[in-house]
Amino acid sequence: MSDGPGPLAGRRVVVGVSGSIAAYKAVSLVRLLQDRGAVVDVAMTRAATRFVGPLTFASLTHRPVLDDVFELDADQQIAHVELAEAADAIVLAPATANLLGELAAGLVGDAVTAIACASRAPVIVAPAMDAGMWTHPATQRNVATLREFGYLVVEPEVGELASGLTGIGRLAEPSAVLEAVERLFERGGDLEGLHVVVSAGGTREPLDPVRFIGNRSSGKMGAALAETARDRGAAVTMIAGAMGVTPPRGVTVVDATTAQTMREAVMRAAPNADILVMAAAVADFAPARASQRKIKRSGENLQIELVPNPDIVAEVGEMPDDIRPFLIGFAAESQDLEVNAAAKLRDKGLDLIVGNVVGGPFDAIGSDENKVTVFGAEGSLTDWPMLPKRQVAERLWDLIGDRYRTARNTDGSAPGGRRRRRS
Ligand code: C5P
Image (cartoon, rainbow, N blue to C red):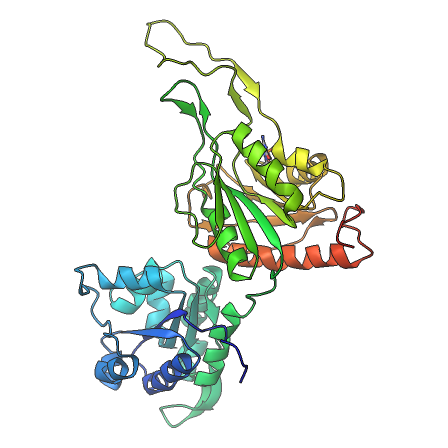
């Protein structure tokens, strides 16, 4: 055992139990999670309650067990929505063939599926069933769909099954499921000692005292990046434009709602930053003048002159190497993602650029999910599926952290050949 608190200390984990004979193993799993310091809530399907009584879990966790999708908690809130929001991770163990099918189809008829569907937390599924059911194409297709959603699957094991036959389908040992949950959180710490600056949200360029030219950016991607960097031990400054979400706790927030104020904030923060991620949607143009008075309707056409805004990230890209942070930009493109992202990487002097396609059938703006491709000087570096933004952020920090460390360790040169100050 390690000396300090482990990766699960204080984490909220929801264990969702479905109706398999292996439901009794969920009891051991709950105990293991609690031993590691996690705060565990249990949700059960109706069928699960026929294998293990809710009282067993309630006695272990000292918390109410959710087995009814219509339940309200003590404050008359919808309990499954509350739990879904509070959860840091959701573990579905055992997950029956039926549960996998419901999740893949988005059917939310009970407390377990409702929590999994409503939450943005990572979901781990540990299937348990008869070998024939596990190998059936319908189950395999459902598992593949869940992987596409970003769910992590702890594969069932080969062994004796409830039928008495031997085959694949036995629930993985509780210790293996526990390990998968711990792995979700144990990367925490790899950004320790680094100062990370993340810009997020959209800018608003005033036209008059009440109107502005803005964009639909919600700031969700930037907030997820700030939050995950914080969880990995970085000191985080978030330069926040107009946001549709609350900035995460524990990060320093600098409000900057116009491109000019964002430029000032970024230029002030950049020389002290190790890594700058420009996730903000900065307006490319601003009205040449903001009217002091509210513009009145006159029956005539209204002409507004727009002037270009400074390209903030490009200015940082030109900073002297001893103060320039490792630099990541975003590129939202409606077409030719690879070509446009590569050009922006070069023109703006970036180390990496995160590209996503906007304006198609799927719109990442404002969504809780995103499908991105990361490009470096050598071309595209990733082939990731559509994932919840929080998981996109985790993967981005894996990649950015690796690249940053390589840039520092190879004789002080960044990937583009620049001298780094911390050589
Ligand atoms: O050129 P484009 O706006 O597509 O570039 C996107 C990237 O450049 C993003 O990282 C964005 O934050 C940054 N940007 C900026 N200043 C601007 C416009 C965009 O820093 N005026």
